[in-house]
Length: 427
Image 1 (spheres, one colour):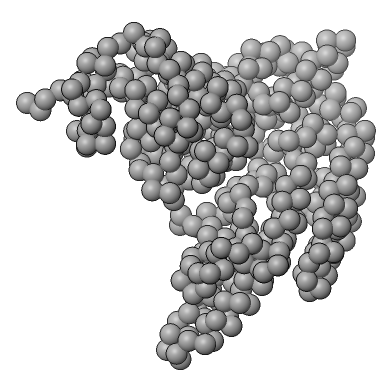
Image 2 (cartoon, helix red, strand yellow):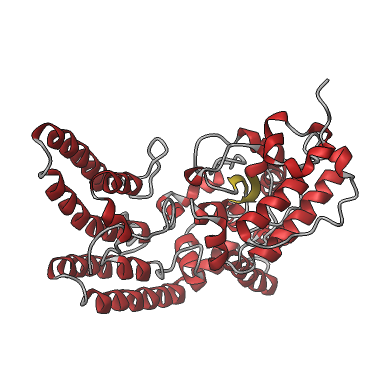
């Protein structure tokens, strides 16, 4: 098998927030739109105040800034675990499956003994959770080890070395900076995958005329340095290190972009490693030494609202109001720059969730939260049909298209000739 482009979840595909100190949940707030892929989301700002909207990707109820700040204020007034857990009961619809499972786990124990804190519950369950977590991690490592036997000898040795290191690290306390991190492990595997690409690029560049060769090699060495010192998913001036490699391939070795890297099965298997977002045991282990306020904030932090391009900028999507949706931070990060149709294959409920999203948007329009953008339900319906391949209905929208399109921006009118009969003529 040839070694070339890696098919991977670009940008933030691994559990990025595993690398941050969870204690910061106690001090920081999360501005809506803080997570983005590309340059500007300012033309999507009109979505930021929507309330009661279900995430079009997950169905979880999104929290806007006002709701989030209200939660923080209310949480600060609660001085016991039982009061905090009761407050959280109002936010269970804004919890993803892992977070909701942890919430009910704590709720049940505190209900039995209201003197206990959330931290008390997690600490009591931490030893068993750690045992189960290590068992799951070891099984994934074994699967990777088996798959590595099909690699070239050089890559097989490198993967086995990474596995030896990882197996040692999962036994280190999670409080220790040398403890195993999924993101770090994935980054090590990605570097192994790209080492063959770099070697092929260097060989190809050495065949160029002297002047061109020097320029090409300087580009290559710069990208290699970045790749060795920076996580592959880090956004650097709009590009990730992995994207930089792909650009070099496109310029100097275009045929390699159609080939699959022999490390791809290894990278795919590494995605099965548990994180706090995907595994209850991982959540308990990671959060068991945090105080109740930090735990409470973490339970809803994945549902904070962000402004997302429907068609990614990298695929020609514009920074225009008709190309934005209001989505949770978690799904924004997970999607990255994948097409919505490809993302739908990972989350088959997206068509159903998009319908709920549109119903919620319509309610917000009718409640006066989208003044000047009453046309949005019509055009986002068309975008969803184009990108997801499903029809979503707006029959419940009581506003006439004649009234809704009164404020439609002139710059967008050419894109939607089907609505031209509703456009207000320029004065």
